[in-house]
View (tube, one colour):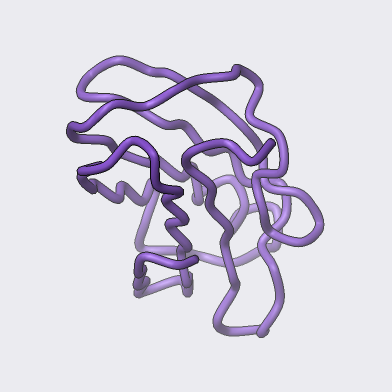
Length: 109
């Protein structure tokens, strides 16, 4: 069964998935799940199972080590994406489109 929140990272400079990035999911200030992006840039398996309820959430992507491993400099150490869950019955996919000096996100499907 698909978790209620999923994510993936795409490297916009090279047009490829970003593998090996540590990702944390918070509900308010509470850490509720951790994962690492796979070869497809997706967190396929969160290390913890979790459920959600309406409220504020935050994904934290630890991008600096990923850039350093590639011999690249980055303006960012972490990328934080804060979002709201209004309906806990829905699925929330929150992608990160990443480059060394910019990023964007959207609500995916």
